[in-house]
Length: 144
Image (tube, helix red, strand yellow):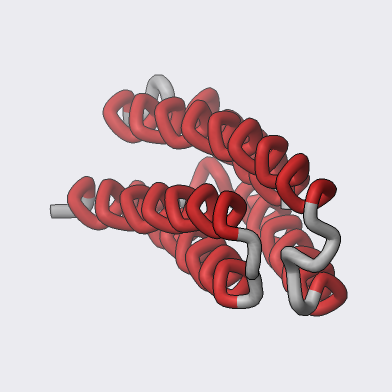
């Protein structure tokens, strides 16, 4: 799960750097989102310590790994498309890409949360799920 947060942060940082002159407000939003994703990475590092303490904390770890792999493949495709067409993308296009990423993260975190039995890990994942929901809200609000 940590790699998903790291890769998402890297993508958001790239968007922030590439949009700083053309869309400064968007650049600021993506800088904030990138920083948040690094915070999520730290949260997941804490979650990993919970998981190691309780090996049964995830009921379907294999399924979780498959979900993360699927997310990473999808993110790689979005990054490739972004880099290929960055000069032609509108703010709406960029926001839409990010919303798709965040929706996918919300789904992945929700699914993993539902399979978690460890109370401490569950609480941490609930916070992560809420943070992803907040990203969706911020992206939606930006388009208004």
